[in-house]
Length: 358
Image 1 (cartoon, rainbow, N blue to C red):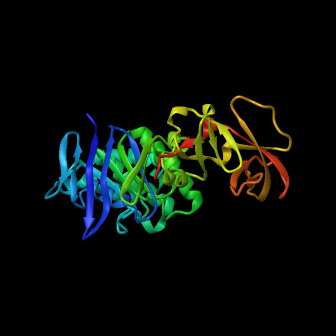
Image 2 (image 1 turned 30 degrees about the vertical axis):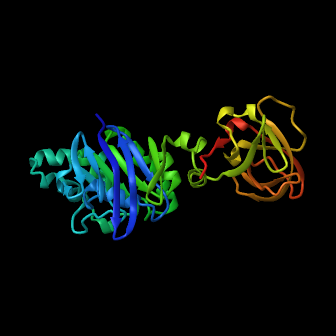
Image 3 (image 1 turned 180 degrees about the vertical axis):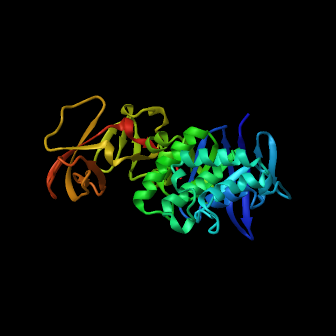
């Protein structure tokens, strides 16, 4: 049986639909991120799962038990869920240990058992040596670890995280992404994680649900989502990409001033009429001399229009010969090309993801 099931869940505020017929199923122990821009409905969806908001339509079930439906919502405290907010929401007048113990005390557990559980979870989050400190004596990353410990120690059925790293600096955010994933691997709690940060979702998640204007556009594993986006929005939101529009004519797909044989694509039968592809900058390679012909790759002449050196790689803008099209290309640091230099672009049609018509 699935652990958590959202079935056609919608939420309206007045005449505005914020969440629009969302369907999502989580298996036990799965980590799923809701990823999207501000205002796309991801936090509203999370608040409905938590029980803070009632759906206008649809149902939410956990382990076969209905938690939410219009006019009938189980309150948050009876859902066996833990939630971590952007602000951490740890008690300023309690020590680290007291904060972590609070949920166990509410459940009236024996004091010896509480002490043992608190000691263990603080060791797991590497905060045991700071158990006597107060929140104002901790860094942002340390406060986040306390919030994680407090949420996990009560062994919830579902863990909910609402952009928990947004208040941290870039270095701490990167560190805490891996910490959150490590804790998930250790405790295997079914988790929903809300974020607008693609890197956070990619590092932490088993699957990512990309949301746009209240709807889920695609749910997939991070690697599949990046390599095979299904819509323009997903392709552009998950990393950088090139969008190539073409027209199928007989055995060819005709682009702006270059043509690729239809049979070179993974699913030639799916190519009909006007088509649009997503092609990642890393999937294009630049050469000074035309590389040898191949059944798999296509070679197109072009000119370097712009470049930027970013330390770990070059970011080139290249224009195919005679075309108005501009392609972004990522190259390794030693692959140095000058602006206005003539180059050859090598691309593999098997790495071009066909997007759904809008």
